[in-house]
Image (cartoon, rainbow, N blue to C red; front, side):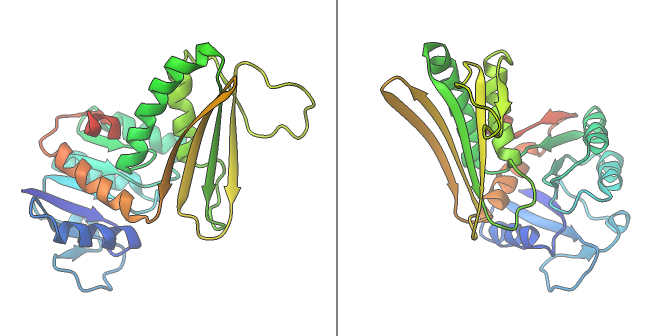
Length: 251
């Protein structure tokens, strides 16, 4: 049995995790932490993380990036492995997380979806086999009209995984409207579409001579991120200090 503390338990993702855990006999929520305690939960909820004295095996943090340093310090103090699902971390905050991983197990991923992380593995293999055989690579991502950043963090994670696999030879190109020239051999195009209520769609296009291979992932609900975090929690139980990501979970 894996015992979990959820930070941000009363938010949308926290409640999704609560529902998923309720159907999984291998995990239980030991406690929650949130700035407001305005919901009925089956577990105790604390508004101050340092008031939380409940034993747990893993922390899942789905709250905002604000105050992440205090939450990381708590994980280090209590020696509880922590899964960081907060988005929008600054460079300084990311450095703080990395330094903490020398003292406690930390899992951080640009996307908690199991499918996306398997896709990252697949695109690396495809890039390794196709890039040197004349295939151009393009990434197209689509999200809802309320999303603030573009391209998405997941699109950049996909691009980075491809580029790393190919020796960091590629230049990311986000806009070709100002340049009138043929596509360069080492361009990796990244396009962003924003509209409606699209949860998330990512296409990686390998375009060769007379053939095109497209690897795709479509998210129909944000619940996939909650489910991935629960799978990651089971993996992180008992892990020693170190920096982990979802690729480790899928190994």
